[in-house]
Length: 633
Image 1 (cartoon, rainbow, N blue to C red):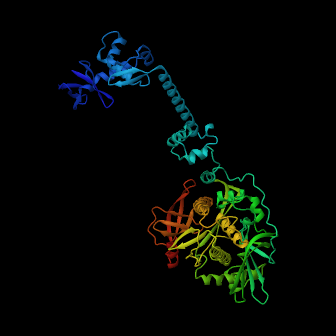
Image 2: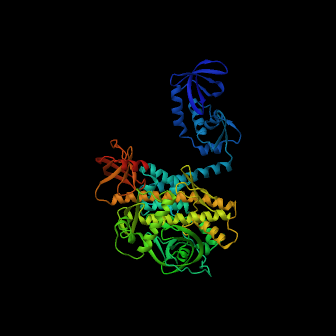
């Protein structure tokens, strides 16, 4: 005797070797002996052979119509053998019984299972709902297949209109479009970004990277919408100075300027003038809400997203030829450049010039300061400020900048186009710690530390940069900054570009005017602003570094010569000589940190922002200075 039995939801056949009433010992079709419970047996039969029953039943089941079986089935629960008898009109053989079982079992939306071999027809309303669900799934599968085929053909499906950022940067895998994109990626072997780029969803790889940042940080876009007017403050005294700023060529948010005025009896009055948008709008205003939301200007090669609307920047930027509202710190110094006293004032400051780095550096540098150089506008004032900065730096006992580090500048010509899309990149470099750097840095440190102390002495909270034990953090109470060698350091010199500087300016203005500060002691809003700024500033800085890497790869791809030179940082990690790009060179022979090598550029990827290069030769062994510089990176 043979049996058809249920094993974990699967139908199998075997020959009975021993009947123990409640259980059977059976040899299955593969010759394996096993023990099965009697209530798992669905059908006893003598023929055909166990290995033939299910294949023949499957063939017989193909001729059965599920719809018809449902129509002729009664509403009560039934056993498949009894139903087979009614259907065939005679006592069914094993093949016919098994065929009915397989047919009923394979149509769960028509027949609900009520036990082994027992079923009940689905109610009509439930059946229709289930059939509608099946049809919906069929249509969805068809839609997914159609969209996938269009993607594979290099076309963007109409359904993707307006959804590309969501699909690429934060896909909802329950959506048909996301499923189609995922299927197309599997079939094409391309990443989602590469496939969408191929289909024309983006004009260039730049849009992919920039779009991701906007999606994460500016989901509502970068437009400010309607912005209220922001008039200058009235009745401020006009300073008797001629101030000038020092910035690079791309700076439009000119926050700081300087002045040098001879004092009666000898010495000078040095003015550090900071743009004062804090005098134009207050905490809780619409413009405050805008600045509070953005928290900082976002910088990247060839572009930036300003914290404040252009109209506000234009109103308060320290533009040459205007007299602008400012918070001024005056340092009275002797002929020997010793600081006698300081004073902070709210005033209107005449801006005589906006000096630019590219104009100053050829005539105001270490060589011209040591060996003399040509005359140029503001030479006397700049030389005096540099001499004062040198003394201030020595007084702190800390250099304002890393004198051996190279700074790189990126300039993107958006009017030009390369094979990689709009924009042609050029990368310049300059040694950090130039006279211009030292002058500006030291005067900003003087202002930020002086105003931080002023807030602390007045018992008014501010936002400080604190460094202790090698760690830098933000705080709302004054504490030393060990890296700069100052008792406290409150960012106050860039209120057009950083929200914390704006907050500190409001707090300082309240002290100068003798009114209640916008943020009182232990203000929860102030601490939340510190937290949010720290998170945003970190995210913006990371994006800037990412885009600098991207443009470094673009710059490498623009080169005709595949041979590049680099310094070894550690193991197989190198940094290029002419750009700040750091990457790994797989297979490179072991070199000491600081070694100068040549490489052959083999391949690059603008989506992964990486390059592949081959080691060519060792140009020079590592020097002690080069090794120290490499290990410091």
